[in-house]
Length: 224
Image 1 (tube, helix red, strand yellow):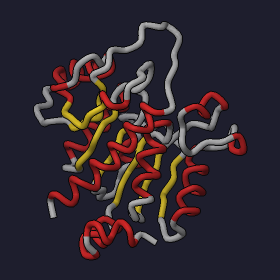
Image 2 (cartoon, rainbow, N blue to C red):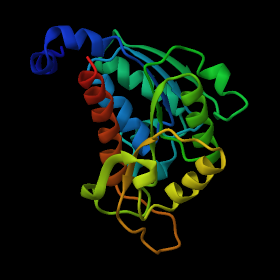
Image 3 (tube, rainbow, N blue to C red):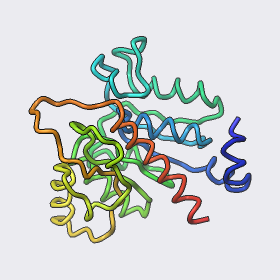
């Protein structure tokens, strides 16, 4: 099933990739693509956390959605999609809004990576603090709305981000918490469109999700 990938990285390395334990918070435009890319990379162990249902406005950008799943729970759609790709995949799915008060409940496993694709900045900070405290590798996605150029996305660290209002707020919060560690992020150097109406494209969020997937795979291979 995954011969094209295992041929590329080697069978022994593929076995390591296959057994990674990944936690993904948020299954929207970014999280859905990150999740699917990792499922298609052969990873079989996931915890997914999302409190949302599919809305018709999600169709323009969220890879897990279509007209048949409107008003259904995103976690259920994600599980069904993953099983349709690889029936061997094992998923713990929680319909929950993650925050600092319950993160110890839902993220209580020895994950190899935590992927933050949520929209709430307080939750992002809680994930950062939890991951650092528990020595779990993690990556955070920053703003992808109101942007048109996926080629301006990059894998970087929070201290090197520019033209990202969400990153600016998060940097301040991290500084206030006296967090010194490098925080790996996906961020865009594109200036935010000044239209006051919230909008998004199909390509920037999904490109960010695929960058996250590539980060997990390449970081794992780099450290073998």
